[in-house]
Image 1 (cartoon, rainbow, N blue to C red):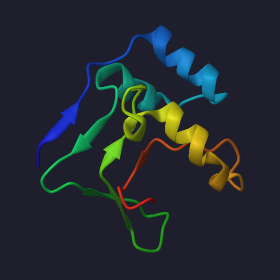
Image 2 (cartoon, helix red, strand yellow):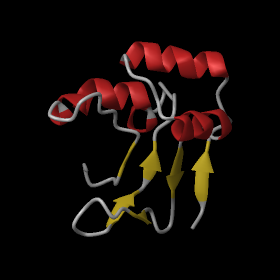
Image 3 (tube, one colour):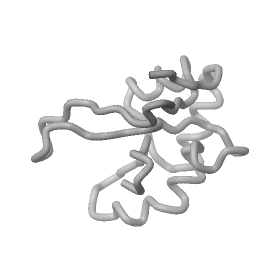
Length: 103
């Protein structure tokens, strides 16, 4: 499965994103942004990750967001500004990816 990604961000850029979103990223996600600045899958355009915390035990995804303002569907700030209200019931939630089906 081909993986498309952008070059990583600097520490300063990651801190600016956290400030704009008023959230602190987990260290794993910070490291991801420093290395890849988002990614998405092509052909097939989704993958699955194990997640024991949910009933299905896996979660589908097609992208992890980065700081990519020119590509709103891949940009963490654009996506969270538009949709994070749907997760208000989760304290300090931040969307870091999606499955392409709106989840």
